Image (cartoon, rainbow, N blue to C red; front, side, top):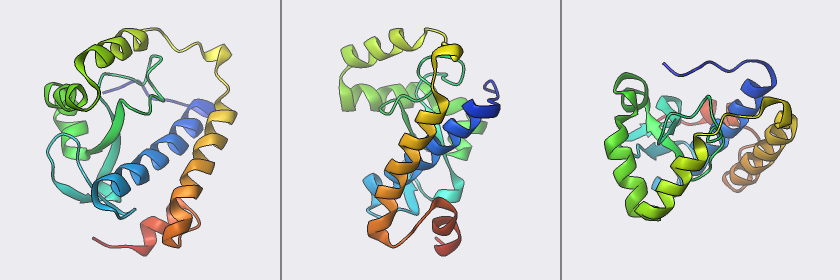
Length: 150
């Protein structure tokens, strides 16, 4: 399993992951609480979706990569090791092989923890999440999760 995050990095990741899940749901179904897994194409309620990385990402520079982190069901992400070949194929189709290769190479750099402003990252993604939720009548992520059943 991927390296666990703690402290400010975890708080920033949680904000990013919540935004990523809602964004992915809206992009795939038009609803903020149900989305389609990037690797198996099945629909899931947001509570069964993860923010899955195309390439292993919790310990390197691709942790908060908006293009290479997408909604993925827990089965694919956690129990099928992210289904990396299928995920990579989807990203190649969407962005082009050359671009994905560039992102992969850039992402192999370690996270410069002392240089990352996790507080700013957390604020940025909370604001982006709020902007996605308001048109649907939700004020926050917890309200969304409690308010809709699949």
